[in-house]
Length: 423
Image 1 (cartoon, rainbow, N blue to C red):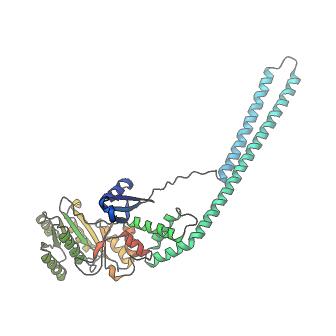
Image 2 (image 1 turned 90 degrees about the vertical axis):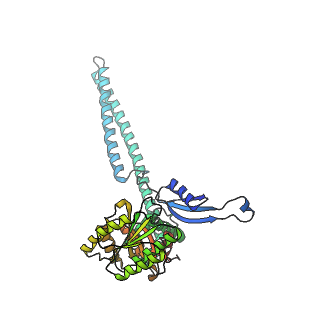
Image 3 (image 1 turned 30 degrees about the horizontal axis):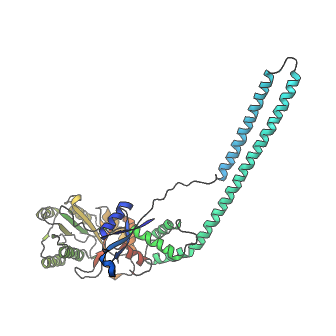
């Protein structure tokens, strides 16, 4: 993990510096505003300091200081064979040289001399082989000692950190984080910890890993050059209509965005009337559509607006026909001109959330909005579904107040809550 600090006049400039150096996957860990005090105000301007982090790519290649036991055994055998072959070859060459230089009538002397020389060479070769084998044996013993020491250090490190890891694992599981993801996080940080790491160091590592895995929120792009059509899909009763009203109100009142509304939720008269009320208060148009053909006409009529929010009817994820209706409606808008947000309740059981999110993933790509955070004490499912689907997190809501009770996903706040701290 790489962590850097950047200082600039604005948060956007500092974030840009971080992205240029660390890449697009950089995550902002902390933002601090520096305001000069006293006489310093005359000479220094206010600035913003951010702390940014990104996962560091670890190389899987490792260099061994010593060969392992099997390789050393092979090396001993190969060396023995090569040296014996060299000794025999040298002995034969020596005999041939002596025979060539042998004077007439001296066969017996030549044989004795060659034999004596060959024996000396063979003895020298044996000593050389023994010396090399001794060196290899020393090398083998060093390798065995190094392996034993490494294992002992690893066991000591694991024993030292085991209690802390168990505490953190229990806290995350208590907050309903799936055990698979808990183990994954702890394994990710275990190799980078020192053998005497304290609880604060381990907590900091887990916190940073969770923040990085959550990533930056994917929000509605209000700077798009063409009209964006924003679809809100999801089960009945999760708060799609209220969420649309909160986002539309915020963008209309604070960003002066040209907003229009479309609803296809004609199965609930109350939903249409609720959206009409919000549209009248904000002074923005609302169109009701009953079919994909109506949707195409509404899209054409509202093309001069910046953002068009489409409220869809709550559908059962188990009903294939109803899922098909949603898909046809979404596909009336080209992919490059649309964004889709799957709205889920944080109070829904995890097994149901898995079925819902995977079913809608078969229809379209989407971003995630979680509602009703005020109705639950555990938010592990937010992290779980993000990890399961890979879909970006965007907004969270709590309460019914419009345009309040909504905010963007805060990775730092979620990480703190999952670890038992205050948000």
